[in-house]
Length: 357
Image (cartoon, rainbow, N blue to C red; front, side, top):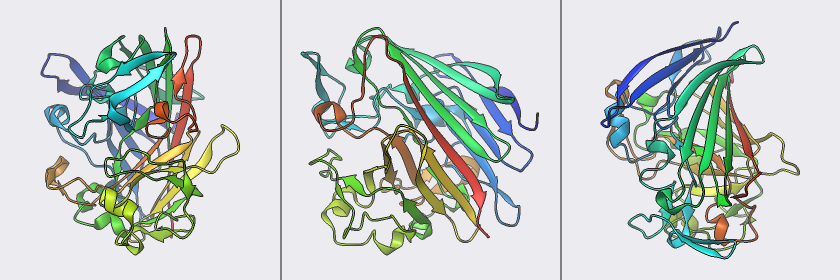
């Protein structure tokens, strides 16, 4: 087997739970590290066009730092990624009130969401490759959600440098689910996440439309066309070229923090985004079954002290969160996020690493 998986202790939580670090390596210089606290991707090492490796995701050196983190570095988001207006939704005639943030809305599953849980880990072989499975039960009423939700997330690394993440969920009563990963990428290397550094990355989003939001990130309409707006990344464009446009949507988010609608005509894997760092030649393609992708340019990161002594700054890194649309439970025209008893949610996202000469 050309891909290996090893694990070691990563410490103990403040409540006394043991956490392990699992590291995949392939024969081409790619290495993926995940901990079973929050399902966090702590490191993703990839070679540049000269074969020089660098860790391209933001993170911390210690478990204690992840426990105190409020920026969701590298973690699984659930039960519901993104926002739910006023923390309220109605399902099968029952009104639910979720935990809310200071802006008065629910975000990323609440303060003790999936990103703050220790998941049960197991290792197996799938298609001749090692696979890490993380499992967690979210009990009925947690953060206000209905039903006992059983969730599993699997991670694998291929010989070609493809990181595959699968999300599964089922529940004993109808509930809402929207799962994603919240890694911050800088393809030059995490230590280069300095002020405005991500703006020089070139991006392509395979999306003809996006969802306009207010200044709290709540949708204000159905998806609209990107044509003629700074949200048009159908052709490869640097973020710097458009992020300074005097546009209400960019003003609302102090940059990009929006959900784009992935162009698709079925539920199969499709290319959602491509990002390239010209200096290193590293290229990241994001392929997914999800209907949307939240592109966030790190507009609320400032003086964040990360691993190896790095200090992460404003707009120093990029999140590419494949997911359903924000506030879907309150927008009937959006794809449904309801999981009923007997249903099993399954979504896949693949991060394809390569180099461009």
